[in-house]
Each structure stands twice: as structure tokens, then as C-alpha cells.
Image (cartoon, rainbow, N blue to C red; front, side, top):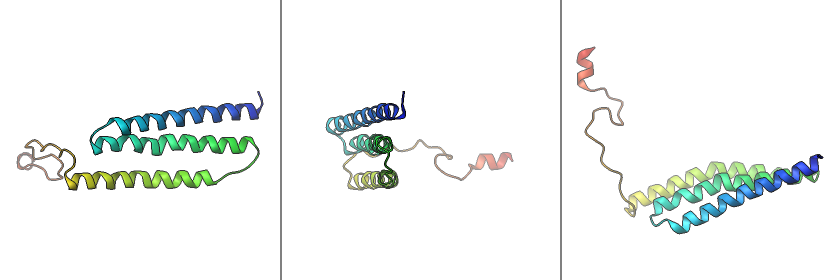
Length: 124
């Protein structure tokens, strides 16, 4: 097999992977009711799905003998901004009270703290 045929197959595979993730993300966005659960589906599409589609575009341009660096810049921008925007959307939903608040932690001296309980200080 020549490099052009392998590149074409690789492009097709990455297009199918990207399209699959986009389809699952759209279904998840439409299916979920709560804004916080809706947030999970598009963030996966933004990273994995769009990344696979852009990778297919890169492979296709190299198969044709051209160089294309625009996709790398788009990938870098998406991979940096997608988690930040998802975090901001989640914080807005938490502060507006449009979602369920997380449960209260159990009474435990070690839960999410850096302080040691008094019992361990006495033992040492």
C-alpha cells in the first residue's frame, strides 16, 4: 500500500471517530435535563471529537503534499479554552442555584483539609 492510500484510510478513520463523538455529544446535550449534566457532553466533543476532526484534516493535507499548521493552532486554542469555559459555566450554575448543591461532607477532621486531627498529634 502506498502512503496516499494509508493517509486516506487514516483520514476516514479519524473523521468517523470525530463524527461519532460529535453525534454522542449532541445527543447528550439534547437528552440531559440539568445544566450541569449537559455540560459534560459538549466538553468531550470539544476535546476529543473536534481534535479527531482536525487531525483528519492535518493527515489529509499531508496526503495531498501540502503543509497545514492552522489545525494545530485551532487544537491548541480549543484544548486550552474548553476546560476553562466549562469551569466558568459550572461555577455560574452553582452560584445561580440552578443545579443541585453537592452533599455536605461527613463529619471528619481530615476531609479536604490539610490540618491533622488532635488525636494524631497526641500519639506522636
